[in-house]
Amino acid sequence: MSTRPLPIYATEPDFYEALRRRDERAYQFLYADCFPMFRHWVLQNSGSEMDAEDAFQKGMMNFLLNIETGSYQYQSGTRISTVLFGYSKCVWLTELQSARLRTRASLPDAFDPADVASVAQDLERMEIVATVRQSLQQLKDECRKLMEWFYVDELSLREIAGRLGMKETSVKSKRYECARKLKELYQKLADRQGL
Image (cartoon, rainbow, N blue to C red):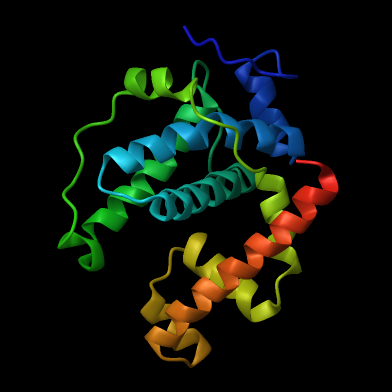
């Protein structure tokens, strides 16, 4: 049995409903509850801190989008953070299988939720997903599209380059530049909100 508190949600269905309503406190709790476990898992399975951040952000965006569109419906007995972990894990496994990582990484063993849960208690809180979403909306149009295409639509850099009429190497540089801008915007919002 989990010892994690649901700060204002008595049950997992209540938590799901809060996410569906875009409750910022629900986003904050989900990010803080799940990212530390996921980061640890990625670090143990051939990834870096940045790999963990990228894969988790993509998994989180996909999960929240599926909640908003109704593609994901809560099922009784399901733990929301476990579902999000699964989304993010699929993103990372896809990255590991991609040609650019195949030469330096092997696929990890099966994921054991019990191991992850025991590590989660020792890991620090992370930023709020709602603030990331607000920051994303403040990006210039080209940056916002690039970030959404890469993280939400899961387009390759080559596909994005075709859409933007740029070279693939330029898109890669642009993605890092846009990610840096997104982090700056996030930090300003987080400071204002006292996070």
